[in-house]
Length: 365
Image (cartoon, rainbow, N blue to C red; front, side, top):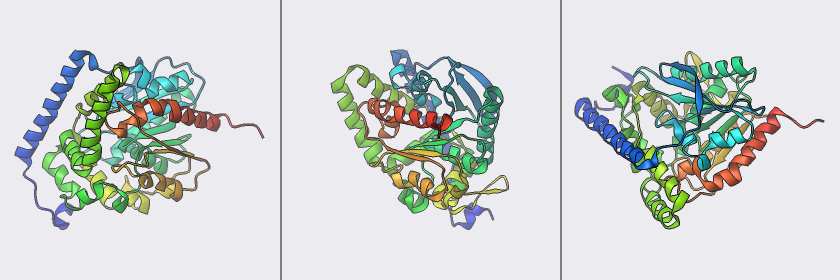
């Protein structure tokens, strides 16, 4: 009997649900392609590719001759990477380049169904090693949402291999602190069963879970933002449509990774308990040794501030920074506003880059 059955879960009807939801993913991508034709495609910064292999592509953005902090951005392995770089005025990538940073990004590509946390962390490690080889510097890791969670796991697994960790609305404490997802998980099948049923879990499953978990954030606030953006017009309206475009571009998540995230992290909170087994190694928040910055939305139901800030309480950090995101208009989802919002780029990201520069170039005694 497998682990999922031991928990009392019933088998899921794989074929009909999988066909429908994968088809829904395809339909949403087609709608996104239509927005591209209507001139709402992202305007990404030029880059070169340093690594391209199964499951990942390592980008290095141009110009790459800055003398500032060396960065590795880790997006969530659910939707497309370009939310970090959708348009010149709403791009963390371009903002970092303007500050003289050397900017890399791990772009997740189609991964086999057997990929789990071990493979995901190995991908981050391979990127860190390549960046260190080319630049001679240990990079700062920046991660949003689940990408930040994976970056935090890497920070615990290889604590010497990062200059700092920047968590951008990235949860690390789960269980009862998983916010709106906690009650949804309590009445859902084990993640292992879902992963077995689908093999590669359609993006629409995750989208539906978010809608059910927090209708306020994923339905009502989105509609209100659309109305406010339409009234403002111009770049604000375009920003909203770019955010909408991004939400349509979903791709499947490997069944094994989905199960490990849903069960090991969200249900059982193993990272904060120090019992998360990855590749024969137990990982816990207390193993993080690098400086940590955390950007939180005090109003978020999906990623409560306490689920991010828990890492700062659990680990013996040499330096820390906490910033509060105060929300924007024209961002679609407020969870994206910290990356693309006007207020975030005006008030938050300059402070993040100041902090990174201070770590790289400490003031003399």
